[in-house]
Image (cartoon, rainbow, N blue to C red):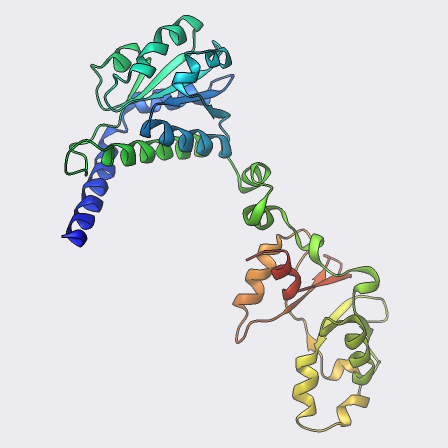
Length: 322
């Protein structure tokens, strides 16, 4: 009983979303172009469950390049309509198109001069008649067995809001850099904003060893810097290879004679490196996808083969780049 009803609910809502593809018409495109050319902001409003969906739509629009905010229709009727200007576009959400709080503010919005885009299931409703653009979010039936609780209709409205936001995002050529600017906090911000330069060990903390020095000398350098690796440089200070504690351990399994040999005899020549302007998330991806096994350090080198630093896996994990 429980499992069957849950499956039926998902099927009804999936059908409602799938049906929306037939409702992406010329009027939808015209509404999107109106928002695209809007000189001010998009004001999203809705009551009850439609209001919760409206908040999500407003947040998605705002974070993808379309200035937007949510206005509660009941509060709007008591002063918040002062936030609406004649240059704004108002997205009004009501499945029936007859929600009292929405219908009551429509004449004032019209008087202000803002453009009204309706998200509704009924074009012949009060909202449909007041709107400049009508986007059909109607569904055949709700998933609620009583046909009362908004379920399929709210899911469809949310999906249509995402469709609009993504269409606008593409039209604006909104980039990942733009997205990062609006998401500076948390894990998402760290992934999108943090660069290798921000986390690498540089200057005195950058372990370097010259060619001609012994593997024993390299071991001392690695121990002092505590990164388990050192960049090998030639007489002109150019990067030529990498030596790691893993290389040392594998060599120790054979004999100890190598400790007195030049470091270039056991280093990895031309290892994978990374530029300082690359995202820290890119460095993590390079480390994790390295074959035949993941690596824990990446030398940071510029285009002239000058070693700028080293980035270690623990630095990325500490910064939350996961």
